[in-house]
Amino acid sequence: MDKDTITLLQSKAREIRSHVLKMVYKAQSGHIGGSFSEADIIATLYYHILKLNPQKPKWDGRDRFVLSKGHACPALYAVLAMKGYYGLEELDTLRQYGSLLQGHPVIKTPGIDMTSGSLGVGFASAVGIALDEKIAKRDDYQVYTILGDGELNEGIVWEAAQTANKYRLNNLVAIVDRNKIQNDGRSDDIMPVEPIDKKFEAFGWKTLKIDGHNMEEIVSALETARNYQEGPVCIIAYTIKGKGVSFMEDDYYWHGKAPNQEQFEQAMKELQGGAA
Amino acid sequence: MKPIAAKIPTRRSFSDRLVEYGAQEKDFVVLEADVGHSTYTYLFGEKYPDRYFNLGIAEMGMFSTAAGIASGGRTVVASSYGVFITMRALEAIRSFICYPDLNVKILSSHGGLTAAIDGATHQATEDIANMSTLPNMKVLVPADTAAAAAALEIAMTTPGPVFTRLMRDPLFDIYDKGEKFVIGGSKTVRNGKDVTIACYGDMVFQALEAAEILLQEGIDAEIIDMYSIKPYDQKAILESTVRTGALVVVENHQKKNGLGYELAHLLLSNRKYVPFTSLGIADSFGESGDYYKLLNKFGLSSGHIAEAVRQLKV
Ligand SMILES: Cc1ncc(C[n+]2csc(CCOP(=O)(O)OP(=O)(O)O)c2C)c(N)n1
Image 1 (tube, rainbow over the protein chains, first blue to last red):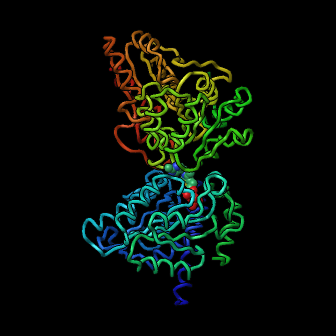
Image 2: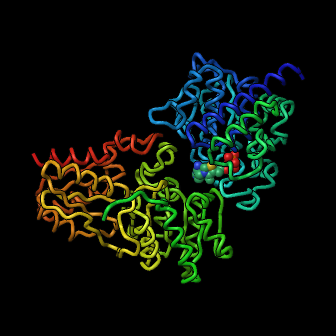
Image 3: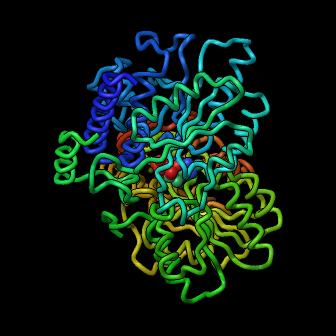
């Protein structure tokens, strides 16, 4: 695999995390943990996989992306700004009155393909977007969506998974951010979800399991998924919630808390220290 | 009664009282849908791990499960955010909790625009309409810390399903600790002679502020806290409105099918043809932002209430 690509993606992921930290610190509200766990995947999608035109956000031939775990939108907002959908200065307005960047994604924000934030629904909407491509008898774009592992608790996820299988939606790729933590604690304690791979397989999906912080593995899985023609693909990405800042890693406290000044400075130091 | 800044949000006060109640009543259980650290039901879980069931992020399933547990006679307290409870789980609540009239007590956090920064997907602005419409359902909206603790008490002692709307952020305390509240009751928090303002939840404080503004202009407003939305205190509204000769209803909720619609209906059905207006969200969605900026935008600030009264009095 091309070394330069990997290095680029790693630096973009680092940049995303730094933006997320600043945004949530400034807003004193927002979800850092799940933004950090998905950051490497988001970087890879936006800098290597998705067919996009930031100058024309609604370009009809673009690949679609739905952040089903909508609360983790700071990472998405950051990458959209980095890609030029809007200015980086918008990031300072996260969750504030009149901002383009609402607490949860809304379709009116440039680059956002679907409103989300009520868990489970974004995934079913992504299935709908993929189904619509079939209805239109088109075959020129892919639909990607990221779900949380806690989100898999929602029954609607499995209803939508059935639909994707029934219509053999080979244009759909779902990535489960398996960070093993949800709002109230560890997923295994709140609601055991394993075996995720066997569940999706039983629902007719192809599955891949990867280390969600290993760029080579992310790139290779997303490329495999894009080229797979037989049906929908689910990539289970094993990640660490809060990845990139030692004291935030694997601690459910950082699901939805904002850092104070001292924590912010410490976290920024770590992110800029180079740990991807 | 002088409002003071609240130390805790009503969601916390309700859950604190729930924990105390757990010692007193030993049979009920609490169900949570993975927001227990936000609704504070986790406090109950820490004290009574055997009576606390976190069913994960699965609100529709949780309320259906609550119905099953309650069908055998056991009281269930079920908790989540208003948007998920009153919409995703609506059918379970209607057909399998309200229809069989089961003892399910609903802790519903993030009511109205008080989930301010989270944005429209997390702001329950249709919850009162959805819940008040259901036969057998009782609906409470405590305005402050003391009222929220009392609401828990009312919910647990009133037979059948009870929905309590709670707020995300700490706002203002109006009542003394231990103040008495009853199902179907109301509180006249300010006596006045020129206009009646009926309101609930966070709007009680805004109305009190509006009354101060109006007093400067020689308008003496009566304010009624309608903490029990269903059933509600018809007598208090009719008596006060007939006496003051005008009614303004204020709610952090869609205007449509909210308390304003209900009270207009009450007045008309009783042939009380008085000047009337209601303030609420005018058929639109909320958005992210500072709570006070949102109140301003959606016309629910004390200034807006005062202006509505002025318009009514000309
Ligand atoms: C339907 C619904 N219920 C509850 C919530 C509140 N909530 C926001 S994030 C979250 C936990 C999500 O956990 P997970 O899906 O694992 O996401 P991650 O850990 O990646 O942040 C919950 C319960 C919600 N947004 N939507």
